[in-house]
Image 1 (cartoon, protein in one colour):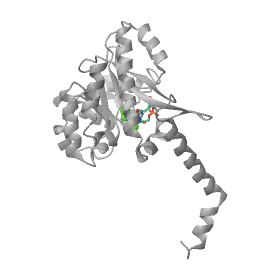
Image 2 (cartoon, helix red, strand yellow):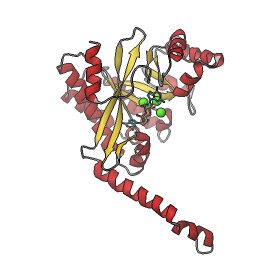
Image 3 (tube, rainbow, N blue to C red):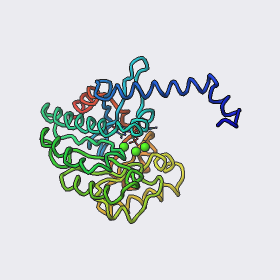
Image 4 (cartoon, helix red, strand yellow):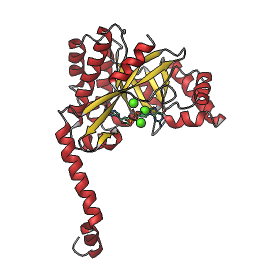
Length: 276
Ligand code: C2E
Ligand code: CA
Ligand code: CA
Ligand code: CA
């Protein structure tokens, strides 16, 4: 503003200028990256109570030229803002389908892969049809492709999101509520959602081995989920104590650095082969 000299000074300060320039560069690089070969999916295993592999979560990475591997928290929000995530999200689903088919064709069995959805996908009525097309093309059997979504992703148009989720579920896609327990989890939504898994947020997992009250809360969430015919995945399991406490709470599946960090497709294949 003209009458605020201080703001003008701040705008032209070299420090802020470089922040703006960096953001413009990031935006330019991200636009150029979509459709290129700079993205990769990494895979983190979800383990059963008996120690076997239940499946993997696919986590996107961006190999940005001149920068290196960029974590999704550093580009997914911007990609969503720029309207790039519908396209990128479709690539993620296709890549996951290809990987499921590759493991099947290599004789490693039908290994489920979960992809993370975004708000733009959950407000796109076209999502179920292109997912089903990809599943047909890669002969993905029911229950093998999973999708993870947060409750906040549904908030812009809950009725549309719920309709999309019912279509996906009806077409054999397994669904998970991600980061469960954070934000405003609404019990009334939970009943309306055709969901197979709740992913207990890392914050609960961290506290459960320390605070008995948190362990009680975890046990309560497990009981609720099981009553609703859902399974619970604990995310961010880092210690044997956390694993033990969650096992005592009746948790179904476990994911975290204790078992493995997210790995490249090649490393995930070796991980599978070593346990096959
Ligand atoms: P998320 O879906 O909650 O994924 C779990 C995050 O926790 C991942 O971070 C994973 O690497 C990390 N993690 C796993 N185990 C542990 C552990 O034991 N300790 C700790 N401290 N962290 C652990 P990542 O890969 O950086 O992904 C961050 C977020 O980016 C994801 O959170 C998800 O919301 C989003 N994201 C990742 N891939 C995609 C994608 O393909 N599409 C969309 N729309 N979002 C994605
Ligand atoms: Ca997730
Ligand atoms: Ca999560
Ligand atoms: Ca998260």
